[in-house]
Structure formats: C-alpha cells, structure tokens
Amino acid sequence: MLTLYYAPGSCARASHIALREAGAEFDLHPVDFASAEQRSAAYRKVNPKGRVPALQTERGILTETPAILAYIAQSFPAANLAPLDDPFEFARLQAFNSYLCATVHVAHAHSRRGERWADDPAAIAEMKRKTPEVMADCFLLIEDNLFTGPWVMGGTYSVADAYLFTIAQWLPVHRINSARYPKVRDHMSRMLARSAVQATLEAESAD
Image (tube, rainbow, N blue to C red; front, top):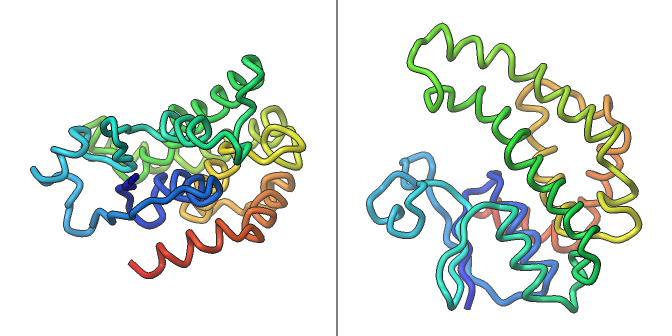
C-alpha cells in the first residue's frame, strides 16, 4: 500500500491528484505545518528534508514532486498519465515539471520562507517584494512558450497537468489575477471539472 505524506494546499496536491487519476490504492498521512510537524524528529525519519510530499512505497520512500509524479505514471501505465513510450515527449514532460519544481516553486517560497536564503530582515523583505514580479514572469513564460494546450502536453492529460494546477492555485497569494494568462485560466477550469481533482480538494478540506 502506498502512503502519501502531504499538507493541504501544498505542492503535494499534485501527487495526491495523480494517485487518484491513476486509480491507485493509497493512504493519506497529513503533516501539520501549523505545529511544524515537518521539522519534527519523527517526520524527519520519513523525509530528512523536512518537506512534503513524501510517498511511502513497498521499496522505500520517494521525495520530490517530479520524481513522485514520474513514479506514479510509470507504476500505473494503463492510466496513460505520461508519454512513457516516447523518450523525447517524456523528457519534455520532465522538463516542464522540473521548471515548476526548481524555478516557480522556489520563486513562491522566497515570499514565504525567505529565511532559507537570508538572515538579514531587509534581504528577506526584498525577496517578498520581488516575488510577485518573478511569479508573473514565470507564468507568462508558461502561457506563451511552455503550454501546448488544451493540456500541458497537448491533447492528452498527464501528471504535468496536476502539477501546473497545484502551482497555479498559488497565484492569488501573490495578488496575481489568473485572467492575465487565458490558457492557464482555462486549464484551471478544466482541472476543476475532473472527478479526481474534486475528490482531492474534498479530502484535503477535511483536514
């Protein structure tokens, strides 16, 4: 049995959606960020990085969203959540997910966890000030250059869609109106109509 360690509204939502899309049997283990459970000794035995998501499998624990999404797609090939038979297209999907992980998510974190990168209050304040501009630029790149449509990879839904949806939901945090990005906004509407997404949001709202 798979177990997903997650926090509601976090980047772990992408893995949560993907597991439901795959039809996987899994348990959910919420991690309470309000009490800093992610930094507890008990949780660090699960994920020494002190972050979510973490996915417990029969072979061990996986961390990092792109890796978990790839694992889910490869473990449940019948769900057709990634172009597994096309090395180039699979690499393209990985490139998109890596951009969300290494660039967009990090930009978002600069406004909320600036102490990871600086001790100077002025530096942390400057990161917060700059974040909306950086996030807006990231989504402009996605809108104009990285998004194929109607799904991330084109005509077929993939795990990249769960990830984009998850990160796009953070735009209001930075007072960015998704209407600036028509393709992304349409994508969010498409995602909200999916039963797996609705089930994920319902499960996370219960925690």
